[in-house]
Figure (cartoon, rainbow, N blue to C red):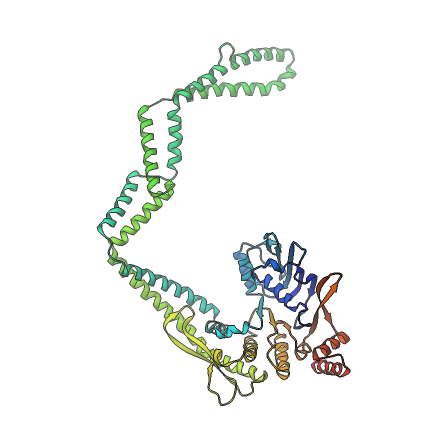
Length: 553
């Protein structure tokens, strides 16, 4: 469930912290009070595009922070793991979104920065939000098929099918490309062969260029290196003015000092080590100088090798690794062209084998859908009867496709006849907006046990129904509240009276600024709010409100 949501400097909200409980939560308030801000804040948490115009006038930043407490964190943890984040601790998930006028927006999950894509992926497992027009999703046959699959619990089979279907389509596309392409001209074959052979003849090795450049640098500067080595050995040398000659003189004095006072021996251990190291250094520099041989032939060979590499780089890539990769690709393309017949046979077999896998998994999926579709239709029809469609007919019609599609071997079309005597027609062609809202609620109720999303938000989906139907809608939402946390933003007292907790959004002028607040109402305050929704503050309205609450209890 959503434990709390904190909103700062968003539109009319200055600073609001909303603590929530389980069950059905009713949210009411006069038109324009700011109820839509709650939905807007949730949409930001779910990764919707940030609009800087939402930032409260006079502020630089607005923030929304939400805390979710989850019983089962597996789906959320999978998203976090893919994003390189730690899993939830003790079932807690904290999301924070900041929007700045400067455009420096931030989004954090459990205090770690994430991308908008991560928020959207998490949102799919946290909140199912339905507004006045969201029932239009029922018009989509793809969405209808998703609902059938959710009811059957066949998501795993669908994912396996889609993976195989993707492989089949990729192989089919590759086969079509090869089959439709004209046989490559001899000129193209000659070019590929020349390119591959030219690179192969150079016998390039990874890392070779750096090694050759280092050798070339030494060979080209042999005379200067010899001069530098001579200067070093002369300064270190044992001749007059040499460092080693001076050190021997110092060593004689030290030896005399140690004979008189043996206690000074430890003082000069470092000196003796330095003398040995400098002697070895002189020897090493002299050996290095003796090995320096300026061989014009070797220098010419290195020059030629560098020239060869540079020429290939200009033709085939900026690095030796890129050149070798080009060679591999050229050889592969050449092999495909030269062995086109064999490649066609291989691809034809691959397409056939993968098509067989698609058919096998697709039939498994089709059987699950065929078994479950009538059960789903029957359950939806039962909920529709509760929502005022006493004699309506609802069916889930499955139709086979000519070719396997990404979603399976068939399509679904929800068929609906709201009134007796009317023929069944596609739902998208028969239902009004008010009817569609109730159908959506009926489908959600049928999927309640299978739907793992913990929070359902209904934003005035009861806007186009009458009073008695609104009461039925409220009872259905309350029923959903036994398995989900449900937020219902409503103008109907019949719905609000059925909520386990009731919050009112108000708009007040403080100083010269307008601010929206949200607070929980109970007892007398709740009766006054329901009376307002019923049309006034007369005692008759209060009595009606008391009766609504008493009936709920």
